[in-house]
Image (tube, rainbow, N blue to C red; front, side):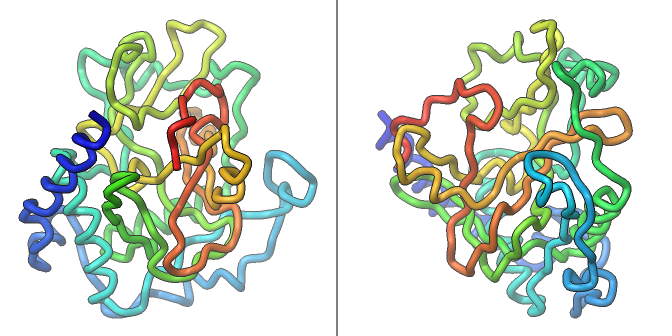
Length: 279
């Protein structure tokens, strides 16, 4: 059944008209407002950002700040990168969104309050929020992180670096429909992400990228039962409080070379995701 699922998706990707998307269709798909031929490096120079204090883990880590991703200089290469994402989303019938979606009948936006988080949630500092907003503005101009979505017959959809990425670079926000976990306990979507972990289980929220989503839903997970799995990890999903609401950010945890596949730990919080079959 697993092989049938993979080859079914492989056929869908091969047959998907998104592989031949024109520039105009790609720009329309991502609702790109303007596409510059050159990235605005003066605004986004990673070297000019001094490391300062941040949460969590060690003292060394707390001194750091999120770095903005650096788009590929070649506009044709950026268009190709966007095309791979558009093709993958189209093949799965998923609409692109860089925002959390609140749908009537699911969890309302008023339920997403970081004060409900068990043990509290770290607040995204002003400088890091500025980085996130810079990256959102870049995406609206068609300047994306140097990443491509690649279909693997064994692993399914994966994400690979199409250029070098520095440690602690902000890559994407995990997006999709926001719903209560209790409504999704029997859901067959394999990309559900915890958004809010409450003392009251009825208030726990998850992100469900089965109808809306972005590149983050295609990042591969490590095998928690394999001693080599941890070595593959090169990014992580971190939950932050932003303006009193919970958000999930995807961040590089080390330098990533061009051609390297992206992996993070699906069990970073609750250790309930089965990964024994992961490669």
